[in-house]
Image (tube, rainbow, N blue to C red):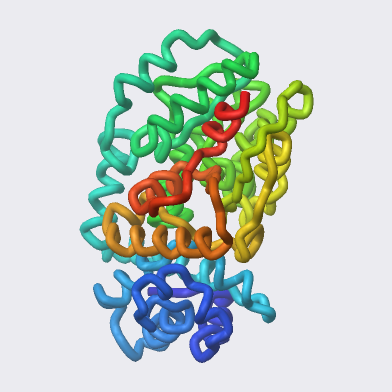
Amino acid sequence: MQFTQKSKEHIDSCRFCWMCHHVCPIGNATGLERNTARARALGLSLVMRDAIDYSDDIINNVYECSLCGGCMTDCVTGWDPVMFTKEARLGAALDGKLPDYVMTMITNMQKKGNIYGARLGKALSEKIKPLKKSDTLFFLGADARYKAPKCAVEAIDLLKKLGVSFTVLENEPDSSYGMDFLVSASAETKEIAEKCAKVLSGYKTVIFYDPADAKIVKREYKEWGIKVKADVMTFAEFLAKTLKKQKVKKSKFVFTPQDSAISARDLEETEAIRTVLTKIGTVSEMLLNRNYTMLAGNLIMNEYMGDVMKKIAKNRWINAQNADAKILVTESPAEYVMLSKTKPAGIELLSLEEAVLKCL
């Protein structure tokens, strides 16, 4: 495959550097050197020099990265393993070398409209149908709609309880987050994004429940030259603004926020969740918080690396236990699902909407 000059420079700079070795959530979960940014760069540098083929093993290794950006946070020299990893995924797609598990999800997108190939559940569908038309769209996203519908239902309940006028689309377009994760900025990814942007532009305000979808629209759409006319914000950001106007009795609950890596690093949004939790209770932090947060799970990778995703979630629970957390609160539906699967005794897990509903 062919790499851009920028990727070549980053690959060559990362291939012998161990600076971020200790912060990779995948590497920490598997204990394998191949799952570090350094090892990935070393393998791709050999491909780049035609020393080895872009083999199935190298390609699989490229898909063993969560793109969480933890490696970039710890890099004082500013190199970007996420950038060349995404380029390598695009290269695999262009060369027709995608793994079967990736092709399955792409086929699901083409045939079913989402990478999971799932249908909207009855409970969520029935919650959506009665909602009236509004100039504010609440965008749930694929992870919430198909993998965490309970969270989606409770988020809708919260907005209704707060007196917000909003609508949710039963036939919601895909934001292209899943495709961007799998094959980066391919023509197919951009086509899906353009279709979504047209729908979003029909509203005055769009609230994104999932930080992953907000990140795609706020960052990637701009890079791809795709415009969205609506005012775009995250769910946490919207709640923070809305609760400032509400009279809420402060509870005695002590909440520990699990920062979404996407919110903290890609969107540079860390205070919204804390503003919400401070309004309804007290905040107690884990050692690794805000920009230094650790990934607690990824539902796309859970499709082909389920055991590793559970281990990552377990590791994050260990961080919470070490901080003597009582109630862990997450703003990501993907992390909520994975943390739910691995929750230890003695700590409560709440989504952000559950935490607010608990105190209203």
